[in-house]
Image 1: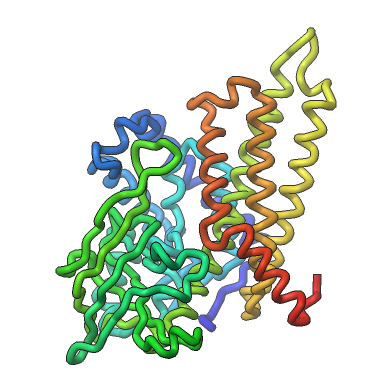
Image 2 (image 1 turned 90 degrees about the vertical axis):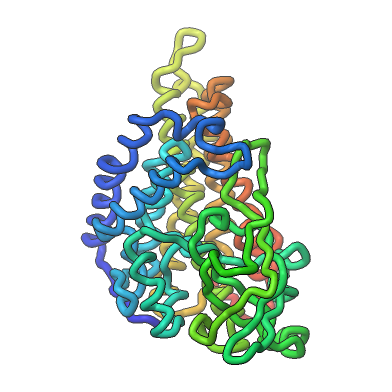
Length: 410
């Protein structure tokens, strides 16, 4: 377990305030100065990829956040990060989404995302690999992608078919990956491949992780995956055609990479809990303001229980989800697996967030469906998160499995 700096309440408040100030200074002004950031036909090219100027904006935010100390705040100290751990990670991300909502989306690059930038996973890299990749990753100049899912291995990730076979002092990787976030733009890919078929078929390991440059011969982003009728995406289908991986590019122990993959997914569940709670609180704030000012039949909407009671329900649900997430972050910082609690946190938070966004749209009436409100964008993202990093069904399976195994502390 990496050394973790545990902040007290005053330090957590300082983190929230610092992130809020950074967003106000570095993120929101970029959106105000260039409205094209929220116009899909301007933001994406004909292939569905971000245009070069958009990538420049993303990189500029990452670099500024790294210089300010926010980008790598929860990266282990051994890698040169702040080592602030899971609770600070959750608090900071919740502030980002609460403040930025779905409108000021460049805020998603203020903190290193576990699957796009440096994280505790890279603590298991070789010294040679660290020297080669960390300087660019830690400063925000480069990014990575996390290549686990495959066409035949989504929720059942242990059934991946991509193979890495020994080749001299290294390996040759062959296979394909799908739904890989940030893959069209990443400089490095963290790829998981079967290195011992027998162990893998018996679900006893046999999967290893490798971090390789996306410029390596044989690697390509075969296509981009557009969803929800959007004109662009950051999801891709990857192909590995006899891709060479050196010994130094092995991450963690040989045949034991699946544990690293699940550590990443665990971070993803906490991140998604922050997304649900933050976006839900952002949407609730919009609904409350609208209900106070919008009048119908001579009275503000806030005079009608049909409007106020659903919003009160969302406030209660978001508060409860927030407490669940805070609890699981503390458990993780204490070195506990918190397997059941992580699943609970994501399940509660995303559900509460979706309901809050839906109720905010209902409060606004037809205005809630317009592009300028960005509520529909938030709803779509949260709907996607109901599958990403563990579907609702998988989360319930994990919770019930832990309960019937004797972990009944609820």
